[in-house]
Image 1 (spheres, helix red, strand yellow):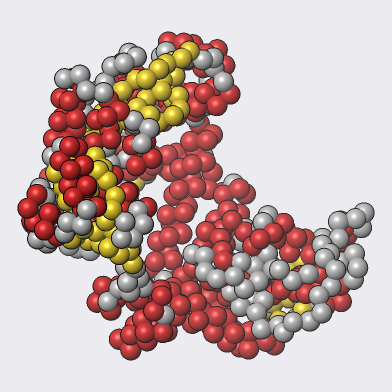
Image 2 (cartoon, rainbow, N blue to C red):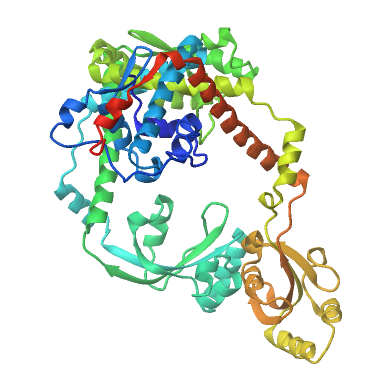
Length: 581
């Protein structure tokens, strides 16, 4: 039997709904255990593991074509899957369901063979990619030896002053201007906590004066924060720091000295190991550059850059054939760069820049190409570990590409499908909760208290808002009414937080906000259904997801019928491997 590990199967597909073995396996095997009407549940039993279990390992439970499924394979496959992902049936019914899943895997392999999935360009490309990745990884494992001693970890801990742990208060704003304004108030002598209450948008720490409530070490912080924050002494406040779209001030409330604990030891060990591994990889690359006579083709780089400036198509064969590097045993072409660039997930590569192309190629493509050539020269591609791993990846990829092919052939989504899903599931497509308030914003607490008293004596809130509110007219109507969603907390901070909790219709305030003092009452809090236009993309994605599951379940059912004469299940043997069988 062709064997796919549980981890590989789970990685193949997205989680869907739970039928028998759970979300992670449903897309491929969702109906493997379905449609077996409920029989009386038997007491929970597992495959036998007693003294005679060794002889049972090779006991055939099913045959699909010329492939045998044994008790040992069934046990190995499901032994690594958590209980919550397995069939919730019991006893023999449970093992029948699990066995059906493995039978379905073999049916998918038969169908993939009949459809010649292994000849598809995408399959061939993926297998070549798996082979490259395996050889690169294996070669580095064999050649790179990195050691980090406990003494080196201790020395690093001491030299980097990692014994110091600091308790910070933080103030987070939406803009650099706001952060600088807050810092000016702090430098002028205003209490940090009071400034936090006025300016910070971080609700969890806002009410504690910014106190984060915990001590952190240097290695607990992102690298870009370590130097500026751990240079501060007790009572000092940082300059505004960009923390990814927001700006923050940090104040040191306290610091303590600690010993090297297990978690810190592991973190330092991991950091030193990674740093040394990077250095060792670079040294190995340099040695192979010389041994394999790597040469950069400057003319090729110039031609490629010129083609990219002319916006040549990535599929242009003439461009793809341009050689950028040569070495004993092979070349690195523009096509290699274009393919690799198309797979980048977290950054883009400026292909028009020769410098960017060279930096990427010599940091990634060149080392990998040299490692592969060296691995081939040492015969690593013939090692059993590699051949068996590639065989498993082949079986996995056949199922993946078969599924892709079937879904492309059979899944279509009409405008009527999308409209029907929207109409039949009104609660599935809701807008974020909307809060409507009526507010008066003034500059001082005294003004706010005076207006609050007048409101309690019966004055019209709309009239007072019209006369006194400093909230910009574009953000409210003339009587102070305005609406926002809970997402507006990033902009309006404490006002949104208070409005989420305040009883509807009750006067609240004065509340200090960054713009002054607010008096408000919540007029309504409601969540409305999104319009069809607003929800259309979400609806289409849902319909697509549902149809894919339905189509593939139907496809599996068809395969069971199509290959029924090639499937034999040994019920007698299945009972033999159960203690109660």
